Amino acid sequence: MTDMNKCDRAAEIVSYFYNEADEQARRSFAQHLNACAPCRDELAAFGDVRDAVRVWHTELLNHAPALALPAMLPEYARNGRAGHAPTTVVAARRSALAVLREFFTLTPVWLRAGMVAASLVVCALAALTVVNAEFRWDNNGVAFNTHLRGQVNMNQPTSTPQAAQVVATANQSPFTQAEMDKLTAERDAAQRELAATRTRLDTTERQVNTLNASLANSKAAYRQTLASLRLQRGGQAGGAMHNRRASGAELAGIDPEEDDLRLSQLLTEVSAGRNVPQSIPNKR
Amino acid sequence: METAEKTDEQIVARAIAGDPEAFGVIVRRWERRIFALAYGILGREEDARDAAQETFIAAFRNLGSFRGEAKVSSWLHRIAVNQCITRQRRAKVRGETSLEVETTENGVQFAAPINTSPARVVEGRERTEAVRRAVGTLPPELREVLVLKEFEELTFQEIADSLDVPLSTVKSRLYTALKQLRLRLEKFSPEAAHI
Image (cartoon, rainbow over the protein chains, first blue to last red):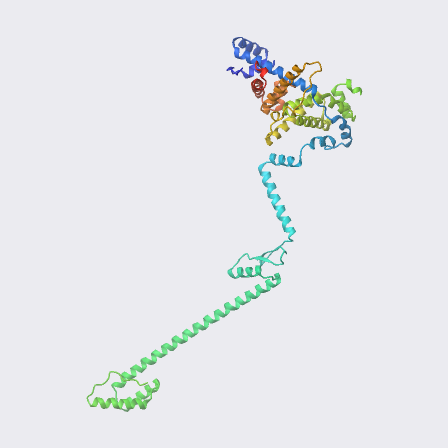
C-alpha cells in the first residue's frame, strides 16, 4: 500500500488516533472520516503499526535482561561515591581512545585550538628544559645558550654590518660571553681611534692644501714681477737700469754678471741693425 | 523482604532513610521497563543496558533531592529519557547509527512461549525483527516521540515537556513516525504488506 493521503490533517489525525482531541475536534474529524477514504485507510494503517510496536514492546518487557545493579548498590551506598562498582560496569565498555575522541569531537573549535596551542607551548618548554636552555637580555642584546655545544648565540637588536660580523664570528668561535664582551669593547675602542685618526688626517690635508695654494700664489706673483722687470729692462739703459735690474735679478735669483754680458751682446746687435729677438732666451 | 507490598514512594523513603537494600527493590521493579524504554530509543542492547544502569545510578545519587511531588516511576522515566537523549546526541556527533547496524544475530533474542508452534515462533520472531528494524531506521527525533508515546504512553504535552519541543512538533513528528513506520514495515515484513 502506498501513501496516497493528500489530506493536510496530520495534527488532527494524530490527536484523533491517540484520543487526545477535544470533543469538538473529535466530532469534526469523525465527520471528515466519513467522507475521506484516504484518511480512513491511514487511520487503519496506523492502528496496525501501533499493534506491531506494542507486540514488540511486550516482547522487550518480557525478555529484557536484568541489570546487575541491585547487588552492587549496597556496596555503592557504603562507599558513598560515584565511580565505584556500578560506574565501572558502565565505563569499562569504552576505551580511553574512544573517550578522548568523543571529547575532542564535542569540544568547540576555539577550545580545541587553545588546547593545541597550549600543547605546543608545553612541548617547547619541555624541549628547552631538556637542552638546559638559558635566555639573557641585557644591553648587548638577547642571548640564548643551549649549553649543548657550550657556545653563545647573540642577536644584536641594532645590528650593523660590523655587529653582524661579530655575531657570525661568535657563532663560529667557541668564545665565552666574557671574551665576547672584551672583544666587543676592544672593537669599539679601535673604531673610535680610527675615527679620530681620520679626522686628524683630514685637518692636515686641508692645511697642506692651504700652503700649496699660498705657494702657488707666491710663485705667480714672482713670475709677474719678473716679467715686469724684463719688460722694463728692454726700455732702459745705464747704471740706473743696471742698478734696478741688479736689484730685480737679485729678487729673481739671476746672476747679474751673466745678464750684463747678454745685455751687451744685445746692444751690439741693435747697433749693427740686426733683428732683435722678442724675448731674451733664458739659459737656465 | 517485606518491601514487596509497599509502594514505590514508601520504598524510596526507606532508601532515603538509609536502608541500603531498599533502592535495590526499586531497581528490580523497574529495570525491565527502563531497559525497554532505552532499547526503543537507542536501539542497541549494550547502549540500552548502559543507559538503564546510569539511570538508576543517577537516581540513587539524587535520592536526597526526590521530594515525592511526582511518582517514582515518572521520575525514573524522566531520568532515563534524559540519559537516552544525551547518549543519542553523543552518538549523533560521533556519526553512529543505532538499530540498523545491530544485526539479528547480536540483537535481543526473544524467547517464545513453550506451547507455541515452531512455525508461529518463526513468524513471530520475523515480525518482531521487522518492527525492530523498522523502528531502528527512523530518525532519532521520530523514534523518541514514538517510543515515549507507545512505550510510556505519555501525553503529547508530557512528551513536549520531556523533549523541550513545542506541542505541534510532537504531533507532526508522531504523524511522520507512524507514516514512515508503516512504509518500512511494508518493506521489511512481506507478511505485513496488507498494512
